[in-house]
Length: 132
Image (tube, rainbow, N blue to C red; front, top):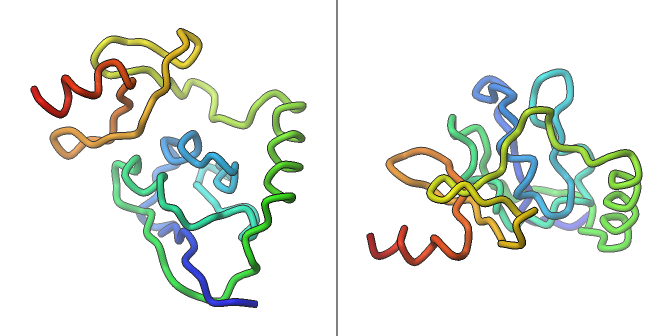
């Protein structure tokens, strides 16, 4: 095993809100028994897009020995998850905090922070968020 960056979840700080699940494009994070978990280390690319979405700061990156990131395993996992109906926590709303758009409306959403809170912002509203 190689030493690499991987997401670490502090179970004591995790409230199980599920906000970190959606930004993980590889599907490495899921809710298990009411807490966020990295379900398989080889699915985590260590990019950390999930970090900013956690309202309690339970997520961090740590460098440690872990299996190599596996693109093929990610593809297989995402395919299986899609066949099973998704994988996002029930009731998790992923909509732009400014205009209310969702990806179903054909816009991309990005996890952002505003006034210390984790929010979603669509690419149409991002300039407004940046420039006020």
